Amino acid sequence: MSYRLRRAHVTNNSSDMIRTLDNYNLTAHNTFAMNVKCSEFMEYTKADDIPFIISSIRKGVEKFHIGAGSNLLFTGDFPGIILHSAIKGIEILSETAEEVIVRAGAGETMDELILWACRRGLWGIENLSGIPGEVGASAVQNVGAYGAEAADSIVAVHAYDEVEEEFVTFTTDECHYAYRDSVFKQADFKKRYIIHAVDYRLSPIPAPDLSYPALKSHFEGFDESTLSPSDIRKAIIEIRNSKLPDPVKVPSAGSFFKNPVISEELFAEIRAKEAPAEPPHYKVSDGYKIPAAWLIDRCGWKGYRDGNIGVWHLQPLVIVNPDRQASPEEVISLETRIIDSVKQRFGIKLTPEVEHI
Ligand SMILES: Cc1cc2nc3c(=O)[nH]c(=O)nc-3n(C[C@H](O)[C@H](O)[C@H](O)COP(=O)(O)OP(=O)(O)OC[C@H]3O[C@@H](n4cnc5c(N)ncnc54)[C@H](O)[C@@H]3O)c2cc1C
Image (cartoon, rainbow, N blue to C red; front, side, top):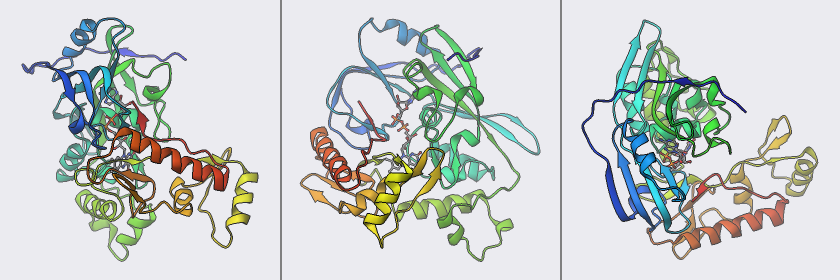
């Protein structure tokens, strides 16, 4: 695959510095609270620091760039360098009666950007409220919830290309966005680009998206034309809190498994076997997508607890580390047991959504 990339000029006047720490504990850098270390941790505050950092890393030394670590499982100590962007800042690049283009630093918390937009009455990203993580990763993951995804609002992604050793800008098309997927996750491109800023298109024109059933019923009887982005944000945070654990209080990495796509034949088999329970499903081009949460729930895992590890009692897709004591081995052991039980009952092999490092 080849992508047309525009060279970009980077300016950043911050006078902060690169923070380098040896034998650094990463517990505070992953929402699963895995107590692991990396040989070196490097945090930077300016895009201009990136070429310097990359050129200073010796060939053969392993490195991995993290955001807030909310979609990661560290499977043990990391024998290399963990990079983290602390590039902050939200600035308005252009503004008309229809649209406001906003640039946010990769190290900005995504939910801070959403709060910033909602407070200014700007529409577009309010349905993503409450998703943990940083702006840089939002463009990698194409985060989504409640009928919206980051790709709907992203207009440009600014990155450093480690191979060509230059700054580049990706248009939305060049990011090849799909469900929780982007060019930055594809084999050829993974780890090649370090994102330092993302441009989002917002709008002062009201556009409430209440298409998601839980949201629709929350606003039943409301006059849609009176709603503000902050009203939607508040509702979404309430709905999310009623289902998902707050990673600050109950460590997790959110949805642990992907929703599998299965053949029509297998779907018919499962439907007959599980009757009268009806498996929730969505028709997709190559079969049926079934919520992994339903499969895991049918295997009896919801609310399961074994020592340090468990499955969230309100959402079986989430593996939790309630006392912050679980080891990576315990998480992997539970992950394996869940995969095995679903395979045995339904003939479906679940794959993890959470990236294992
Ligand atoms: C309780 C909970 C609920 C969640 N709910 C949702 C949800 O509703 N919808 C959803 O989509 N996700 C959800 N997630 C998953 C997670 O929040 C997202 O995947 C988020 O985008 C991860 O951001 P992060 O900053 O933590 O990135 P990390 O997990 O640290 O990294 C994710 C990936 O991005 C890469 N990356 C990070 N920063 C950069 C950078 N600057 N340049 C290049 N690559 C980079 C990493 O290498 C890694 O591959 C949830 C997670 C939790 C814990």
